[in-house]
Length: 118
Image 1 (cartoon, rainbow, N blue to C red):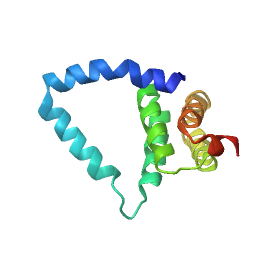
Image 2: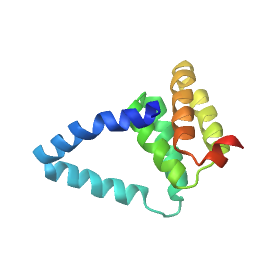
Image 3: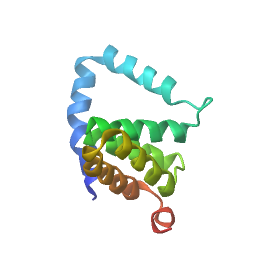
């Protein structure tokens, strides 16, 4: 399994336990997530690129894994991810040269084989 998939697996059990302890908080977050990431004036794929960019800047490996997976599922291309990483480098500087490649690798881990090879 890849690093991003391992990260999501590692977080699964403690997240489930926390959901049982604070179900209303997690329910509220799920509703916010659904509303924020729904198709609208911005496509769901564009929203995932934005979330992935923020994950890079926040240096959140769990967020990177989650939004890389969702971006791949929404049909985001590796070219779009590469351009987005370039923007994070512009805005964040050096740390984005570390977390940007992590996001790139995570995206490729979840992308369709044909998408990752082109």
